[in-house]
Image 1 (cartoon, one colour):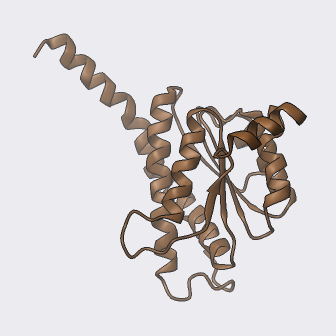
Image 2 (image 1 turned 90 degrees about the vertical axis):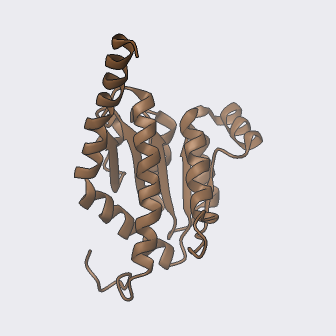
Length: 204
């Protein structure tokens, strides 16, 4: 193998070590987010996911993971993505602006026990932030998967749980996000499988 190619391959993998290790170091934060999610599901809530561009496909991926578990025997949990309906998204964008495409839907679809999960590669997507702010006003549990330094979304008091992929490379951010939401799915089910742990009296 050409030495230059080998060095390049090593560098490609090396760039991913820090962000992956950073996720592992956030284990307690991730577990707390999952416990909060499981508690909402236990109370009859649903998971509502949203994001722009490539994050829109992440939103759809997350929703199907929960509502149609790939592992046989795992409980299906109600979830849907606000990016699925092109007519609704474009109609809202045309009428009230792109900044409101997710917030508007939440105002009409969400109920108090639901969970709002926004995905943003850099943490600065205005419509994702507006949706999380709206969700908080409606009493939803709010979570965000972001990248870089977390952006405005991380700094917002409207977001209960923020999980950051510490990289400026959107490809690496997406890779860490995929791992993160698979872990979210898995740990939510772990909490469901522990008798009594979702009782409101239990402190996580």
